[in-house]
Length: 212
Image: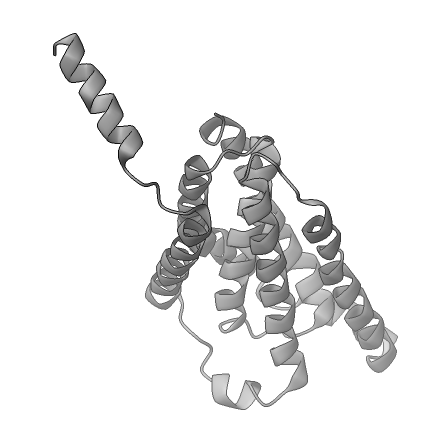
């Protein structure tokens, strides 16, 4: 390629309007949700008694926790993807999830006899939970990391961690429809471990793929 042709090509690239970062994130969220849904229905699907379970507060509470996690992580990730990195307020909001979980755990401990605490905490689906939340979330995590490359995060490792948290919250939302363990003790422990694994993976990958 001649020098003049190269200059013209560079000018043409600069002239092309870039997709707004906010729109990029909403598209990424939509694609990630579709990917997670496909993975969920192909691998496990909803529990047989989903309709009956949906009438109980303990079952619905799982979605409150997972959707709250995903919503707050999404808000924070959008901030972290910008070079100005104004992440203060959304970062403080993240405390809401552990506070809600802690309140639910306390209520569970009060309502359930002490000799049953270990039973509801251990549940019957630990391995399923720790396996399928990461499996459902790995595709969304890849999408969010690609979206981060469209931005300019000044802390790519942290941004990647939050991307993993978002992917984990999204995956846990779908998995909650399958899980028959509805105890807040179970959710607080095993869901959190599974989501934390995705967050750790996101932090490792983000520091590499989202650097600019």
